[in-house]
Amino acid sequence: MLELEVVGEKRQETLGHVLAELIDTPCILYLEGDLGAGKTTLARGLLRGLGYDGRVKSPTYTLLEPYELADVSCHHFDLYRLADPEELTFLGIEDLLHDDSIFLVEWPERGKGVLPPADCVLQIRYLGDRRQVSLIPASEKGVQLINNLQKVWQFD
Ligand code: ADP
Ligand code: MG
Image (cartoon, rainbow, N blue to C red; front, top):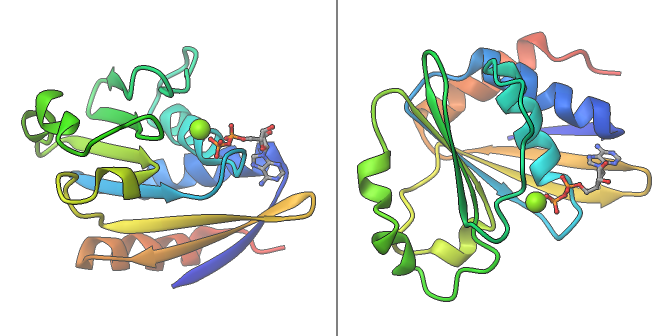
């Protein structure tokens, strides 16, 4: 596990950006934390790092926002409004996961049982004007990602 103190929105985006540079597809990241924790901010930074420069909308109402980029396809989920995990089956989630896929999932606990397992779980907590981001590996790929992040992250 790696724990980071991330100060400010910009820095939260930077963390996403750095993760994008290190990520090896296919990869599934769970983003956990209360409303306003900074999950979408991190996802936005990650999408920027993958080369997407358009607007990153929060998929709160659509459940899923797909981004087809040059080398990867990134699916950004927000399952806050998911009533039943089976809705993910209707969304065709199984067909979305390919060798070049990244899944970023906000509120993954709502998709329990249907959502594929994470490689890495990011838990985000309020810490006054900053956030504590705990990265917990959940696969060998997750371990690698966190090791590599630890090597390049500029600790304050
Ligand atoms: P969530 O998707 O978890 O509901 P958002 O990403 O929409 O949360 O962020 C909510 C607010 O938190 C935004 O105003 C954002 O600027 C702020 N924020 C995000 N990360 C940080 C951080 N590391 N430090 C301080 N504020 C942050
Ligand atoms: Mg959000």
